[in-house]
Amino acid sequence: MDTVDDKANTVLQVIERYKNTVFRIAFAYCKNRSDADDIFQEVILRYLKARPEFNSEEHEKAWFVRVTVNCCKKHFFSSWNRKTMPIDEDIRFETAEQSDLFYAVMDLPLKYRIVIHLYYYEGYKIKQIAEMTKQKETTVATQLQRARQLLKTRLKEELIYG
Amino acid sequence: MDRDVYKSAFDNIEVSDKAVHDVIQKAAEINSQKGYRRKRRIGVLVPAVLLSIMIITVSVSAATGLTDIFSRYFSQLFTAEDTGFDDYSAEFIEKNAAYDYTTYSQDGVTMSIEGIIGDMNFLLLKSKLTAVDGYDEGTLAAFMSPKLYIGELKQGILPATCYRNIVDEGNDPLVKSAAYLFNYDDVETLLGRTDTETLTGKTATLVIKNTNAYEPIEIDLAEALEQSGEISIEGSDDLNAIPLSKLSIPFGNDFRSSIVLKSVCFVNGKLVLVIDSSGYYENPSIFLRDKISDRIIYHCDGILSAGKGNLEFYAFDIGDIEALENLEIVMPEEHHISLPLSVDNPKELDISGIDQSNIKGVTIESIRVSPLSLNIEGRVQEGTPIVAFENCAIRFKDNSVVKYTANGYYHSKDGVYSTGVPFGKPLDINLMDAVIIECNQTTLEIPIN
Image (tube, rainbow over all chains, first blue to last red; front, side, top):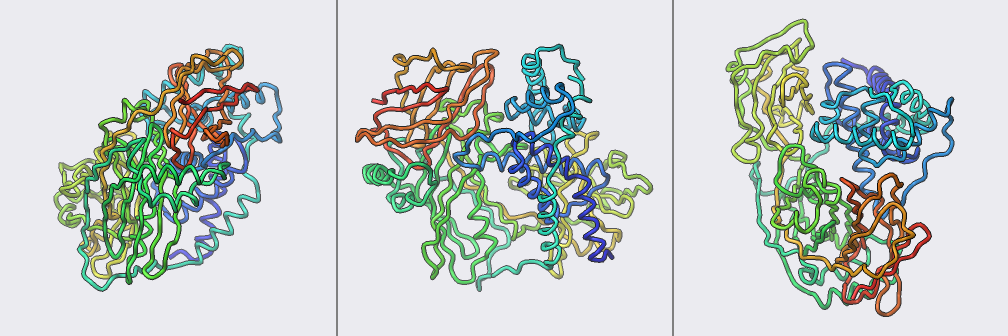
């Protein structure tokens, strides 16, 4: 039987393992640290309350991604009379290329940002993103394509399609 | 796009130490709590399985359908930059008093639906919750948090976003006024655009899910395991390696008939239920309850298999086959209230006189106003950043002006731009004089009548 210390350690390990995955998805969604912090905390607390069982780390990560996306939607749309929040200014980039890309992505419409992030950062396939975001594969594929087109326009350069 | 550049750009985004610290503190608090919340049961015997589908005939109308109950409630609702609003609201309600009334009771809690109004973006539902002695707290909590689904309940459908306002009105008995503002604008991916054309004739379903009360599913796990052939796999965690039996046992005769048990097996000392819930409207959670103690022992959210179609795998840490004799599958109680949804046409404003030359990003094609919101539609100009119409106002005939903020999102699909500006409280269109839209240092003024 797990001791209290074992349980606490497990929780800490899970937080450490997924904190930035969750936060980055939330940030891509909300574009500001404050809301992303809230979502990060909500996801972790949901995990603690549900204590879902996983068969592998891949499944565990998929659970966190799916719940984060759900929390983002809930958080974003529940903010009544919400005003547009500016993107945080304190982010530092090593290269102009990184900076340009980051702000171009942040400038994308909401539904494109999340798809782009799951595809390019987390490396999920279209089918997996469709399952996580509860959309049709064709919808995700279309969103991905349109997001790339928008980025291409905004970055004014030839993109290398991944 | 180069994936490495993308990753390096987002590697700079990291959660703050404070947020981690805060959540660890909360985690410690949760870990220190134990046991289950006790339910307060009423003295009379209540059937364990309670599912009711009520049909409420509601004409969601711009001019009718309000109850005077709204009047004393709206002053506390959805406050925004509209402090001068209550007079309009009261007058509007007084003129348009009408009643659509129904009640629904369970476990000592009664929900009385007192009025509904809706438009192309929102549905506002006013209800009263009354709880008598010995009421079930879980039922009250469930009634306070209903979800609204537009269209048929089916797999993957998303509920409309809900903003609620619940006010205590009395303690003996416990009475709460509850108003829910549902925004179905964001379910456009499932319905296409949610305008009057697509909404008319559709059904909205209010789903009340009680996660503190469970309905047993009439499936004998031990027998199902026997029918499955006692499949047992050792040494592999690959769910896709599980051979499927010919089992096909639905979870019920009602809406849960679309959840079907396809296989029961043991994998590495764990009980695995393989389920096809492709006809059910959301990914189900499965709970196992001890028949003797009546306590929920196991809970699993399931894992969708990438390799086996729509099948989901639910793994429970049960190594002993004999334990199945005392376990039953249960799921949270659900109550469905069906609302035939019809939306009267909102008022279309004449925009021919406005100068759009200074508006960047969007060419406005229509502006419609209803008692609940303002809707702006147009065409997105390719290659130009879209500018949301963040600040809008209604000027009333007495020259007072009330400002509203766009709800922070819009959707542009195939070059079509659409955004909704909620009023928060119902307004009488007949008292409005003009819509004022601020955009890109340009102010548009569109007369309403």
